[in-house]
Length: 402
Image 1: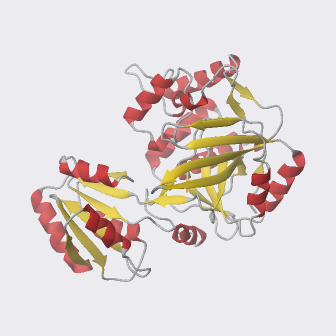
Image 2: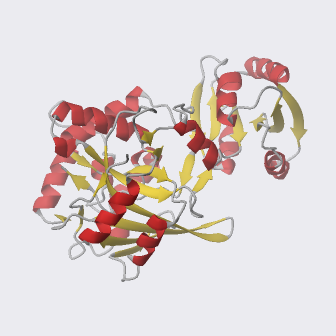
Image 3: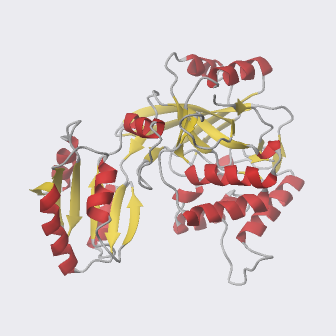
């Protein structure tokens, strides 16, 4: 059973913050250093100061970005920059965006999700990606300092009979509390639902759902550990955004790999080794690259390697597995002394390789949403950064203060 709950959300006071687009931010893990600086300049109350604060040369155990985040939260609440709602509520978020020339809409809602251990036999909550120690340590320091959930975990469920969707759409008829376009061009509309009957129906419907985590694995695991540390039921829930796996607006973009640290000899050795596991095909241009990837059959794994200003198409010879898993096991893992980055932007990947910052790029197809679901429900995990769900859910529309 998936247990969700309404909560008294804490939001920006629109009497004091006239333009909410200047105080919200993307999830912490997709904010570049450049964007962090831009968000700092947008508004002195931008949530990035708590979500992903800047370090200072004199930081120590008593004064650092995590301690400062706690001070910001306390101070902003005291000044009523942030105000807590009086009634437990569930919050609806409609995101409108353009993709490949088409307008798409994604409807989701934000509530609290009861934290559970990941156990395929008992749990109704499933992860799909592996986590790393460093991001968990970072988020643990933050939650201990502020005792709040800032950015929601992104979770997906199947709404086969459209019952949840129908309820949400009916609650979206009044004028939204928030209607803004964020810095990435995504329109966000936001409604508050505090009707006890509607909340009871929604929570009842969600009890029968299997939930899998799309984004926020590190935050979820940190939240679970934090709840065990606090040993108080009020810490046993985490702020979560829920959306329908079957919805038209749920988009997964490809997450390309950038590999650095190889010299020319290592690159030549890599090309030779690829012939053992892949059928290779020279490609003339970026246009050919896209056509090559698009022709992948359901039983076929295809990639493109870009290096030394050449595109090489790869078709896996062996038994089909997830593309990102094959890339990790057969291309990345055998390499030594490398550094890796990830991007959803094909042009950026090519530019970074051309600048010699990286040795080559592995360009991939997006993982299918059904593949992600199936991996999660089997209790398996994908390599880190296998998926890029788009658009991201804004941080700052509503937060959960314990």
